[in-house]
Length: 187
Ligand code: COA
Image (cartoon, helix red, strand yellow):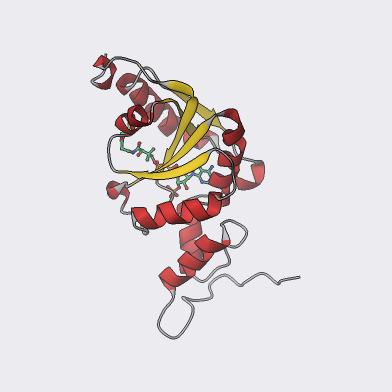
């Protein structure tokens, strides 16, 4: 039994779910998943990990603010940052479900490992997977960052607040970051 498993498995509510991730930044793919999941639970806590090991481009507080802006209006959803073991955060929230997204088969191996480790650490919680709509299956935060950093148009993939933050992030004194990918026509 894992370290967390030695705790009394109480107060874990299957109607409360935690959706953890780095969200660097949140994308429409994450938004799609949250919109699908929110009606299934009483509370859905979008948990923004500090993830120092991933050296995120946006600070945790900024990622939390951007996720709040992007997910605003979806009922039952709250966004919180955390800088602890996920299992500990899930216990703190009294959640019985850890939610993750599966976009493609390539996600599976890592997700299987993460879910198995979390089951060991916190056996009273179940990991559930949802798939995003096909149109978001190819998005990732790093791809969005790369496109934005080269001056490409990411408006199809992120909320306007995120687009603005990305633009500010990569704006050079005196102009846009670049024009490697042409902007789409507004027609
Ligand atoms: N739409 C778009 N993109 C998605 C997506 C979706 N529905 N689902 C996942 N992704 C992308 C993310 O954008 C991210 O892309 P990137 O790597 O290109 O930036 C990638 O898939 C995976 O990132 P994310 O979902 O943020 O997961 P993660 O691997 O960064 O986060 C944590 C993993 C935060 C859940 C995990 O590290 C954790 O629990 N950390 C806390 C510390 C801890 O407890 N560690 C031990 C875990 S057992």
